[in-house]
Structures are given as structure tokens and as C-alpha cells.
Length: 185
Image 1 (cartoon, helix red, strand yellow):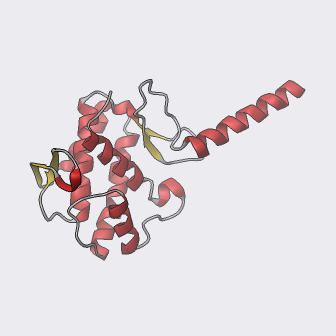
Image 2 (cartoon, helix red, strand yellow):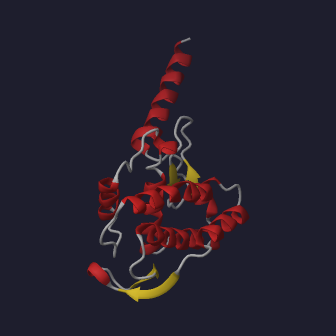
Image 3 (cartoon, helix red, strand yellow):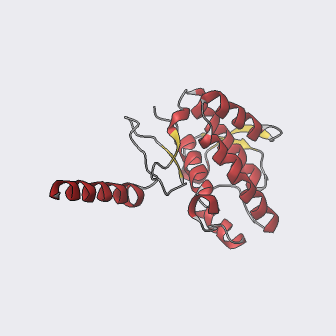
């Protein structure tokens, strides 16, 4: 299943935001307002002019709520969590073609605070995944010592690690070495 560019972009933001939490990495990756500004700019999150300490706290508070959707046992549980995410949000669908991108939907109200903007984009993207019956694509890394989240957008649903160069490669090397030890015995 292929999602629209907007949905895939929002899912990438969700994954990267959840993975800034110390729960995922052991280190706070959004330590200050400057780091939040870099996160917003790096992910090309539009229409956010300035950020402050309150915005940082609010964005950090989103992380466990978003992670919970990845941890949901089934589609019904994920749907319930997404509904709770969007409960009370000021959703305001509108078409836009900013920054050289083709026409696409924005769901957040103009002037929304960063946390509200991210929450609405995330909630809508996650809702599209659930509606498509693709909740199982929202995963926690399969490496036993990793708590990062990922979205498996591969055709054959084979992605299991947050990063194949680190977690995936590390486990493949360990398995190879174990096979070599077993063959030498």
C-alpha cells in the first residue's frame, strides 16, 4: 500500500518525533527550543514561525501519546488511540500549494501552535493508516535492545528494524558469528 506524499511525510515526522524521546534512545533528543526549531526546519513543517518553552513542553508531551498508537495490539485499539489524539483538536481542512509542492491538504488551523500542528498532521496520517487496514505497518524495532518506532512502507512488509545499518546489521552480524561458532564446534 502506498500512501500519499503528505501522509508519508507526516508519518516520517511522527516516527522521528517519537524517536526523540528518551524512552526510545536513552537520551533526550529535544533538549531545548533550539533543537525543536531544528526539528521543525529539518522536517519542513510549514507555517510555524516561532517556538518557545511552552511549545517544547507540549511537543514533548505528544511523544508518549503517539508511541501508544505504535504499541496498540490491534486496529481497534489503534483507532481508539487516534480518536483520543484528535479529540478536541481544531481540524480545519484546506488545500494549499506552498513551497513548490503540488496541491495537498493541510488539516491544522492557520496559526496553530507547533504541538497542535504536529498532533493534527500525525493524527490524520495515523487515521489514514488505520482506515486502510494497515495498522500492522506501525511497529517497534525488532532489535531486542531498541525501543525506536518505525513505519514499514515496504511492499512485502519486511521492514523489522528502525535502521538496517545499525539494528538490522548488528543483529545479522551477531547471527552470522553465532552460525560460525556453531559450525566450528
